[in-house]
Image (tube, rainbow, N blue to C red):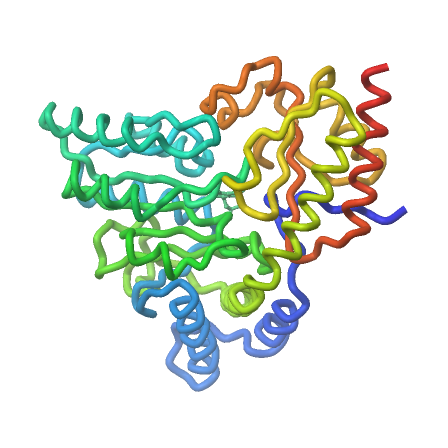
Length: 379
Ligand code: PLP
């Protein structure tokens, strides 16, 4: 049996071109890019060229790109770094990834509710910021994700930024855009924010490498201090192979986006329609018009996600219930809870996520496996 991979939101298979791009830096050019000899300069050149690629895809200047160790680090750096630079309060949306939510909560920050599809409630955001400012508090940073990792909903980051600039003018705007590059041209997002986080493994690059865009010069304190790499913003020897591979994957993702979106949307539609046709009492959690093309999220009555995932795993279908980090936990997802999805409905949540490697065969096998497993569980 072949593995059916419907979990691209958790991680994507690496693009062959990204693997090819990284190999010379694992097997050949192993020098430390901070060194002064020619071998080191070769490695540094690869990092600099990758920085140029990332900047051009994100619509920022190369010197605004900081390479990090992962998306989680980028998010932590944005929030903790902003608070370290200018003490105050951090604010985020209730359905943020744990890499943002836990950090904001750790620092005693404020959490803003979301609407029924998982977008931050803009009126509430304005109110929370106004109340904080009225109470004499400095809002240091506001973080709202570009695309939600569980249900795929999309925030209007330009609008979020306008509200922040109006109600808390001194605050930095951060967006976790980790789930966005395959679906959204970030050149339309980056100019509106101060800080933007990416992670290499969500678009065909490797794990363990990320980006934090820090626009307009250093505006936050570094999280990792040491050798002063990345112009003192993120110390630690560069993951040269990872950076080169991530940039290659990002460039391809950008080039293919306009043709991939309709292809993957058609696959996603076939997948969800197949489930709705084959099973009773299945609801789409977020309307397709409000979410990215690769996201299929349904709540299935009469089954529990855990048991469903178990049977799907037996059928060699990779799927998820909550976000990858939380899957396996009995608690319904904080994202669905924030959206107001009833706990009993949320217990039957299933996330199937498609991406650059998805095929029609994946969709057909996914429909068969889910309908088969749900029918078994309901019996
Ligand atoms: N933010 C979002 C929205 C994510 O989906 C993820 C990964 O699941 C992360 C942050 C964390 O990224 P990383 O796995 O690189 O730490």
